[in-house]
Length: 499
Image (tube, rainbow, N blue to C red; front, side):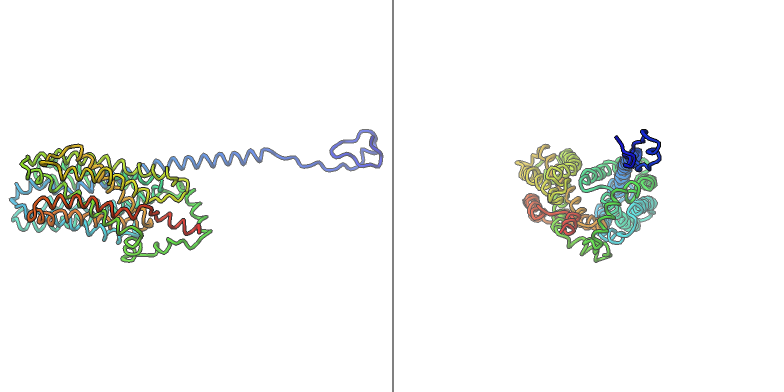
């Protein structure tokens, strides 16, 4: 029982005595308010929902951008190949001989090779999406102007077409480096292979569209073919302007931006920041060519495109040397391209999956470039090399369709992954420059498989062609072997930061 002078129990109202009722009571402990927790949980749920919505929106925008890249580069190919497919009509209508026509086409090929490097270096600080649109508009203009070239005199026509096609080649160099920079900005390392393969389909799509466009315009002669190619490319460039953006918006990339800001606060001097200050020739040499593995990759690309061009250019003459109809090479080359299309689509997702199985997505030390090179070498050794030997040493020149399909599969897997590895060996700013370098080496290899190889075949016979094809396939393997465990540019910088 409570006494008169004793303290009251906390939180209990005394009823026994009026005197006790006058004693001060101890203050009650503050009650927790669970609605504060409810409010914070509602904020967390709302924030999570916003992040999910932003992630879905970013994925949708990325698909739209990649669709725009495929559309634009397909029409780059249409404008590049339009004169090639219109060549028979030019010879028939204007009376040009094959030497003059070859000179016109060579001006375009040589110009494209040099433009790959030149344009990628000069536009490194410009908007890649704007460069993509402007380049497509300019190459469309070259096609339109070529269709309006005066035909009063073969020499005058040859000079005008050669000059316009050289300009067309210069503007063509804006396409591939710009697409590479945009893919690098929109796609993370774990999914870049898939979208790279998706964009690579534009090569095959453009190659299929070009003869169709020329055929539709052939009713008005060769000029109508070039005019249709030019005007359709101008329309496509307007669509690309609406669809393609340089990089994800700040709202969609809020999480990535927050992580980047935190990393910058911890380490303000990022090792890759020196590359971001490079420009011009320094960006090409220090930011691209002198990066680990880039020179070896460029030489491998030279051989891959050389093998491809040597097969396409000379297979018809090779089977003809055995007494077969030269037209029998056409379905075999189509089979080769079908295998190549399958290889282009397969290469990226397969290398993504292989890197994921090696633990790359979970932050392990699995080298990204090395994993892609391992996939490429597997196809080169197990698919491409055996099929090359089967094709070039086929008894009696009887080349089987399975061998041609396998050759296209292995060669295009190596071609696609070499370009993707070049993108990942350099910083994001030098992504276009790396594609320019690899593009230049590719066109140089294709040129070496033309006139120089033709001279060797004419002087020494087809044995030279066989030896160069077989030796080139083996040499590709030797050049890729040192890149077996090569990390990407991002992985090298992350390793330096962790140390």
